[in-house]
Length: 218
Image 1 (spheres, helix red, strand yellow):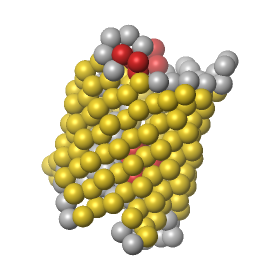
Image 2 (tube, rainbow, N blue to C red):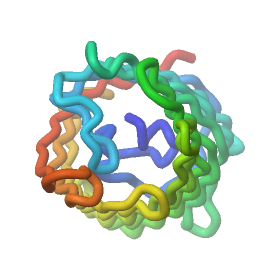
Image 3 (spheres, rainbow, N blue to C red):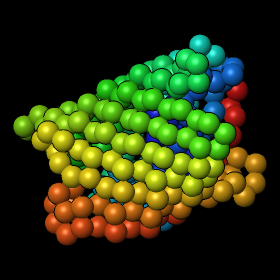
């Protein structure tokens, strides 16, 4: 999942439905994931209305360094999205911290580069995560934006509010729930609402279902 691959260790689906607190991995390793989404929403934005296949590979070092890539098929109109990211995630007295860089690349569109900052804290089954990103779109006018998201959750249930500012404006809410049906096989549900400023037209209400299979490579 995209948010998971940003090393926020998502408990659910690609659209950032919910996260556990940031923490450094116990040991170094390379892992992969493949899956399919009923449709593809990311931060309240409709990337694809069709069923979307995806896959990714991640490396995590025991000192908290991470790097990886993630690809998704957006269909004939959208082409292929391929994301490349890296950074560091660690924990200080129970407070998770993340600093990283992500590029979102599209074969039929512009490239987006972000600096990502994250904080996470968990008590028993309750958690809160905060993400702040500064982004620039490599287009004719060099569009710049900031993105802030706050996720509150309990166990596998979460609620996210995200908002954009500067050259991109708008906000969204997303309610998520994830369940493991087998070892490293997850089913995630997202119910979202994006406002008119974010969509550029009418407000958008959406439902997204994601099936993800994770596996260790070495």
